[in-house]
Length: 433
Image (cartoon, rainbow, N blue to C red; front, top):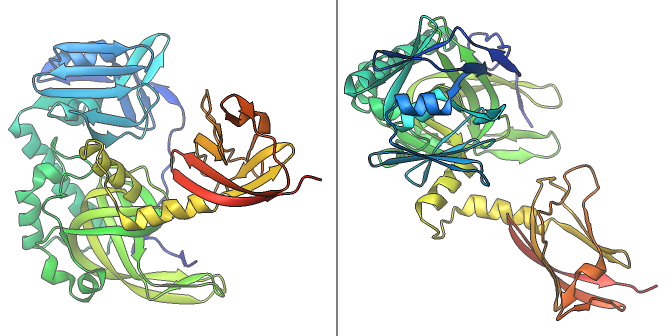
């Protein structure tokens, strides 16, 4: 596959990310101008405050704790927010609202919540001034955050995209949709209903035609990604990604791809190789150097975007599934990819049992396995190992039919495997030696 030789038109210095938890006793909390006393810490650039102190300061009237699920439910007016210890999803009124980089934590029996994610879910804007996390409710704070967002994207383009400037059309579109791009109304698909699906080749031919249009691209593949700390203290995510093209196995490279350079206000938990969905505005063009495994260098044209939404295509699928309240939401490309992985499961039937190996090492969870009329249903969480060729071995005695154990003789057997990622059926030959 092609490798990106230079991620940005201007060079980027990689950031050193904090992997541990740093004490942050000096970090203060202010809510609508009132100082709030709370224990706190910082992890990977995210500030955490004590659950009770933060939620009480936000005016949350009802707080519920599910000890078994380790889930906090906070209710204020018509807004209900759910956060679970150790999990990165934040739900608002039953729908996925945001993916956290660092989940809520419990330390010495005290729960700590990420201030920005929780406050924004309740309609507050968040800023950081003089070692103080400032939370403010009301439209004025959203406007302030939005203006800051436009300025930050402009700075990113100036420093890392060869000085490209936002034209008047783009600035007007950003201003008209500022809360969805930058404010407390922003969520992973905040621009979903207004973004237009435009063919990537058409954008690449004439980006300026769409400089006032919020466009949607799905199933772009990330080539390179960086978190960029700008001189104003803000962070943007910089991505180079491609769409389409043909993969040549002889050279292990993509040909005829369309490349994009994306600047997203904030951070995104993504990595090279991820399939992504982007809602944003075309703002300019440039080029990117690529190199295949044979060392051949090529320069490809590239379109620049400023993004309001940047998320994995699988996350988009999860959000739409949640919104459907249990209904079936089908994205053909994702469905085909998931089924491909299911059908690739390697099954081996022997006297020792049924071995299941996942060559993609995705860590699938087994829901049930059926051999003819004999069924194995786990009584505890059972994962197909993603450690080398270990796989999962299920003893034949675990397959039951009305209490009778499966005892095979030589022949071909129907096997159905159901996991948390889907199901597959196969016919496996067994030889009783």
